[in-house]
Image 1 (cartoon, helix red, strand yellow):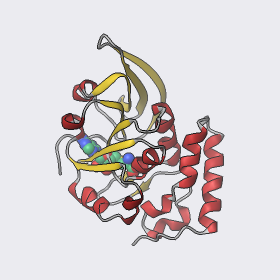
Image 2: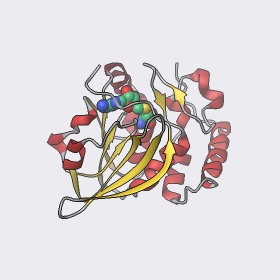
Image 3: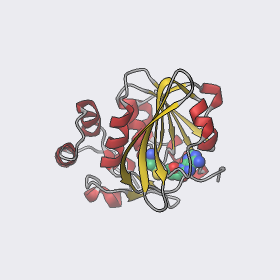
Length: 217
Ligand code: SAH
């Protein structure tokens, strides 16, 4: 069950969460504001309502997780979203990250490989507020060639390698932000596609994500 009531208590807890994230090197005020605006508890079972604003990942269905708010903020900050940019997200999960991107004004295309999670998002009432999110059922390793190229691409599961098709589907000057698996932990990378097709790589800190898996389920 889900609760879609955003009380003063929820808002207060969210403010505290944002303050704690701000203390951990998230400096982009637009990102912090988006986290403040989006009720994270809407994306979780009511049983988790009282802890929805702890800075932790939580289980959703199908053994998957809603990412930790700090991680969502970190990836979003690296993306440097500008309004109307076309952004591809791999790993819809709860759609929390997709909603944060939409709140920042992006046109979001998000792919989920698990049918059940994809179906759950179809009936998520909060979707109506964000017509700028388009949901797809598919394998993120393939990207979305029909809608390419994208200004930005973000992978929200641990990638075993850099998916070549996602590089192809990136605009020149575009970013691909991904946690690359390095045996257990994942290193956050930001890749920039140069005009000559070469890739510039920036490396950041380690995170822990569920694995990016091949095929649909
Ligand atoms: N962005 C999500 C985090 C979800 S966890 C959120 O905000 O809640 C990662 C998600 O990636 C899981 O739902 C998992 O099923 C999905 N996933 C893993 N491999 C994938 C792939 N190849 N293509 C699409 N989705 C994938």
